[in-house]
Image (cartoon, rainbow, N blue to C red; front, side):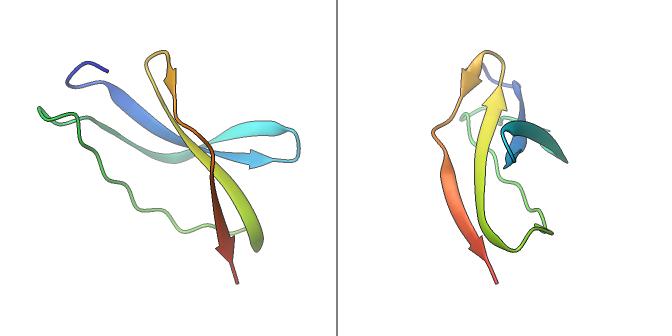
Length: 63
């Protein structure tokens, strides 16, 4: 992924991936960090999208 690539967090809602209102550009080292408050309780499936790259799915449990 190129430096400065815009990365955005997606959440799977039903069978559809929805963009969450949080994104940033990667740093010169390719790093990024985001914070988001998830409103759906239970297991949330999340992934990052940037350029043509899609990360593996991460599962987060919200209680």
